[in-house]
Image 1 (cartoon, rainbow, N blue to C red):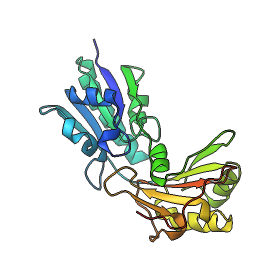
Image 2 (cartoon, rainbow, N blue to C red):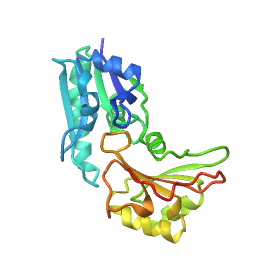
Image 3 (cartoon, one colour):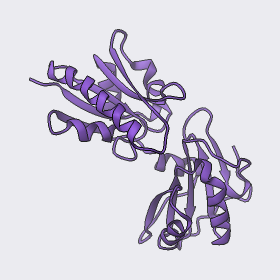
Image 4 (cartoon, rainbow, N blue to C red):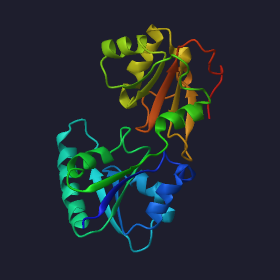
Amino acid sequence: MSGTLYGVGLGPGDPELMTLKAHRLISNAKVICYPAADSGPSLARSIAADIIPKGALEISVVLPMRESRQPAKDVYDQAADALSLQLESGQDVVTLCEGDPFFYGSFMYLFERLSQRFAVEIVPGVTSLTACAAALNRPLTSRMDTLAVLPGTLPDADLRHRIENAQSIALMKVGRHLERVKTLLEDMQLIDNAGIVERASQANQTVHRLADYPHATAPYFSMVLIYKGDEAWTLPRSLSS
């Protein structure tokens, strides 16, 4: 019999935000797989480091941080081949994923390559979206509000249209697009409604009003949250940590 592929959400960074199920699966794993950027160590592995069993086989999926999709596709193809060998031998594979596997999670690309051939179980995790709202200390959405999750890489016209048609907005992947996003929100008179969170729940987390953010670019693990619905949810005039 083939093994089971587990896609395990770890939460956004604080190990205490792992679920009990994630903790149990990782603690008993014989094969662990995790993503890593080609620019540094794996955040996913660092979150679970204290509970990865000694002697477990570790398979690192090193991803090129490029806008082009092709290099990453090749890496996922190779990783799927490596995991197939383990699964075909009857070995379960626990794949670690920051946040939630199906919310902008790298695991989804392994899922699409392997789920037709092997049993797969998804273990949900705390998402960066909810972790950023908690760090900002402002609710995300309420009642009949609509929530839009948008990549900051969208052109200005698309961003403006989608922001205009939602009451709560989460902008991900802002990175080097941050100044352009700030200019757009200033033009829409929404800059005072926006906060930015870096590395939510991690030891180096920072929280700012977007208007006061001191940098022209933001780290990869950053998110801008905007609220313009009917609730009286505002940001403090001074917010930085």
